[in-house]
Amino acid sequence: MSRIKVEGLAFSYRRGTEELFGGLSWEFAPGALTAITGPSGRGKSTLLYVIGLMLRPSAGAVLLDGRDVTHLSDARRARVRASSIGFVFQDAVLDPTRTILDSVCEPALYRGDRRRSVERHGRELLDQLGVGTRVEHRPGQISGGQAQRVAIARALMNDPAVILADEPTGNLDEENTALVLGSLRAAARDDACVLIATHDKDVLAQADEVLAL
Ligand code: ADP
Ligand code: ADP
Image 1 (tube, rainbow, N blue to C red):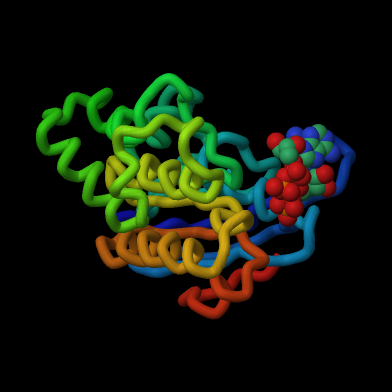
Image 2 (image 1 turned 30 degrees about the horizontal axis):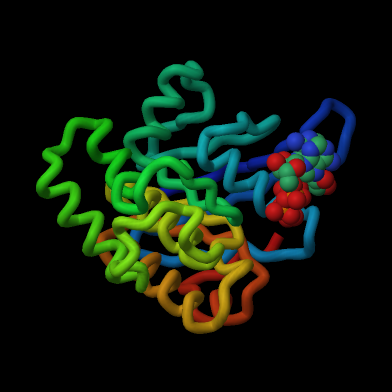
């Protein structure tokens, strides 16, 4: 369980260029779905990268459970990222040579979990997301919307304390949007802190909190 706090956060891609989210302070609670919204170019994606420890802020700090993770070494930040953070990007990138089930299970097998329980969990997640009948298929044999749901299953595989999703429903119809939101909601029920950058009205309507940039 992780509570994320940002304090006085700002970011510029280059010195002297526009400062994004100018001094943002906010607390993201475990168990909650927070939608991050605002016009294109306002910095929604960038905020996810900063909270996801892929970019360092130019001002302010990111605190995970009260611990400032802004000024840790790159190696330590990478470790925190690997152990606690799951990313869902807008466009799913799956290994074309692996089956769906292998792609989903890989993060858990990599950290040494037992194959039998990993595969059980992988199948559960894929069922939940409506792609349970596709486990033996490869990415070339499924639709873009299905690939997106597989990528979400993969991001949820290791039960990350923090889930960062960038327009996860951007290319999905209503039915698939509901499945994706259901899975993110289930992760939040397990006390994950879920942040979703989105314009999607369905997502905004179902969020517990909305942060407008
Ligand atoms: P949003 O997700 O709200 O559309 P982004 O975080 O993608 O906003 O981008 C915020 C601003 O930063 C935009 O003006 C964008 O052009 C700029 N930007 C994004 N990525 C980079 C980058 N890698 N280098 C320079 N500028 C960038
Ligand atoms: P989104 O609309 O999903 O936020 P974009 O299509 O704006 O994303 O950006 C796609 C990629 O291009 C991202 O990796 C982003 O960091 C990069 N990017 C966006 N704007 C710029 C920019 N002005 N300069 C350099 N890279 C950018």
